[in-house]
Image (cartoon, rainbow, N blue to C red; front, side):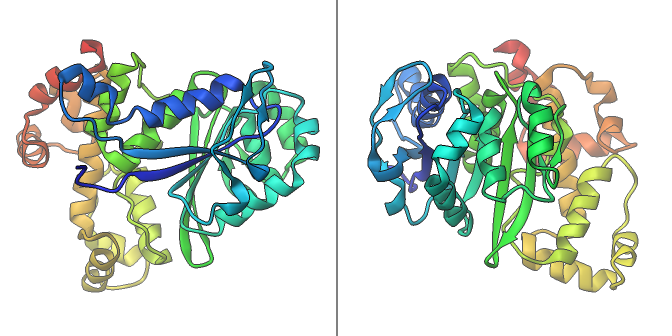
Length: 340
């Protein structure tokens, strides 16, 4: 029996959806904890319970004329861990005009603790629901002008492969992810699998599916598995400052002064929200970025410490081994994407 409860993923189905995006998401999440285990002769332990939901559980007519059968009625979905909005393959205006009721259900589910993620032009459905106002988002470059014209309140970052924003909704922490067009969907899926299941499982999926998991801008996602759900704006401000400036020297006293509290108070509040002290969070962010650099194969062991904010490479190596039980060289040999 599995030692965990699988996470619930709901993929939104609608007429005009891009068939490959719909079935691709279904496959990637359904086979997490399955394919790798089969290859190694281990027990299969699916990490996600994945369902396609449409209005009234009706059949879905994909843009390539494939007819898909939904698993459930989105009106009956009351909660999930992750709500995925796949690519619109048909006319965007047509799909939006025909799915007012569906958009209301997307908005309803956003008012829970669920993470929300869109791929490519699926961001139009999130924007139509008002979920992206004032937040960063991305979509296919070919739709950038239309998106800006339709939704000027959205911070469209068309050059990003994946965007991530955190927002409060009904006192719950909601995370919204958007991926650009084409293969960026794989970046999004691997990012989300890592968020829920950890780096090792995400790497397994990348290897079994032969996916190049190098992300377009890695720094933006360093914190994805470190963020714990909380609603303290002061602690979030410090977290975001650390994540954006982790290569620079940092002292807890300076971080505390930045938000006008004492270092002792910052330590107490930070630990209550994240289960880490600020200094531990700084170290964790740096270690996570070091892992990504080692996995990419685009860094030398000699230069690694300085690239993540450490002047003393010996101290960094000790911290890295304490966190991963591997030296940086051992980690690179084991997880470098060049070795896939």
